[in-house]
Amino acid sequence: MAVFIMVAGAFTGAHVWRETAERLTAAGGEVHAVPLTAVDPDRPAPADRVGLETHIADVTAAIDAASGREIVLVGHDYGIHPVLGAADRRAEHVARVVHLDCGMPQNGVPALAAVPDQTLRARLAERAERGDHEGVLAPPARDGWQSWGSTAGVPDAALDRLTALAAPQPLGTLLQPLRLTGRAAAVPSTGVLCTHNGLSIDLLQRLVDFGDPALAALTDARAGFFELPTGHWPMLSCPAELADVLLQAAAGEGRRLRPTGSGVLPAHLRPFPLDVPELPRDRREHVDLYVPEADGPRPAVVLVHGGPLPAGARPTPRDWPTLVGYARLAAAEGVVGATLDHRLHDVTDYERAAADVTAAVDLVRADPRVDVDRVAVWFFSGGGLLAADWLAGPPAWLRCLAASYPILAPPPNWGLTGSRFHPVRAVEHAGDLPVVLLRAGRETPEIAATVEAFTAAAQACGAHLEPIDVPNGHHGFETVDAPEEVGPALRRAMRSVVTHLTA
Image (cartoon, rainbow, N blue to C red; front, side, top):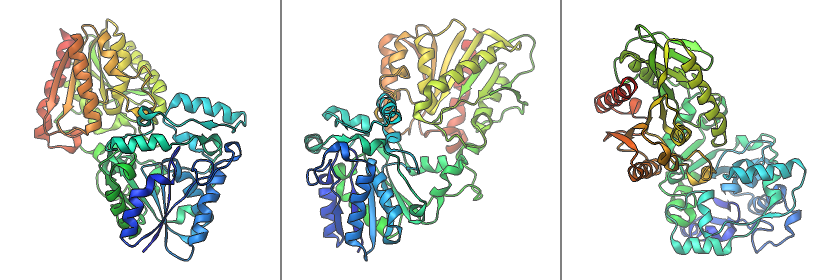
């Protein structure tokens, strides 16, 4: 049976693993929850002298004490940084690294890069540039944990205990870059995804399918993946299920991701579900126009893709069959369809993505084949947050706004809660602007909650909202659900938008 060496996330000590450790021990495993210096009460030290390297040394010492046996390192949240640092230094003694609802830290990148609060991240980055690593970051209040990760499933008593035992995080642990030689990359890995925190295996597969070389390592045959239907703290919300998954991970089990070029057509490259005319594209900078054969300037529909998407994704969204299909469907209805690429590659990129969309709309309106006074903008998925600007102050020429399976309020752990990218709040300023909303009946609960909140807000303020449902549709339903299920809703939505453009 493996030796599990477990490292907790920011502000939390070894105590969070108690229930999970008990279950692993009962199953015959050996468990060591590592107390981190200046965070855990069992290892006090002046915080100003503690950095990431200190915590790497804490984990390395635990590995040395258990060497000679099969060691599984488990890192949660911030804990993956000292785990990977220690695995890099003791790769020959580590059988597997488990990434528990956390990212893939890279060499030279500090843990600060994973801090969700963008304002806090920027403030601390300024300190790092000055070389000021002293001080601590205070732990969140009881109602503030949600901004660091979903608390779904955590019992009230456990959340109370988490808050009561939370400790300040030494800034050096967040600001000191992770230094890796590459040896840790040779250690087999397992990813445990907590779906209520926003990521699933299917979504991860989609990210791999976009073709970004940086994600190719996830398709290694030694990399397995599991899901837990809970929030960011599974050791508190479902410790028994987490223990079961860790035992399976230690045995090398888990779902494998399909590499690109495997012969399976990725979802985003599958055909559009409707027959549409094969109009050629007219490429202008970061925009493609699909122009119907008609006299005089025509109204236009500008299609805004979702995200965040990897920067290296190829082909880029404006060439995806879904967006091209929508644009050609618009042209078949007698209006100009426009697709575009914007730079939403991370949740920190909404500002520049919004600027890209504005520039694209301006470019479309400047085309002599477009009626400058009759334009609709249509948002998809994570691009839905970009709709907030257009709802908050719709110009007179914006005749309709549409959205398909959109995110309409920022998840708490995206660090955007106080930003302007909040359509639920913006809709009260939409006035008479018609809003066509395509809803997926089998949407993920987290996204569905934002759509429900938007619908309620729109109804409360008397906004002109037209919901159109795909009852059995999933997120991205155009290429994942049967055409007969999706097609009628797509035609109805497009004709509604065109009606608003031509009225």
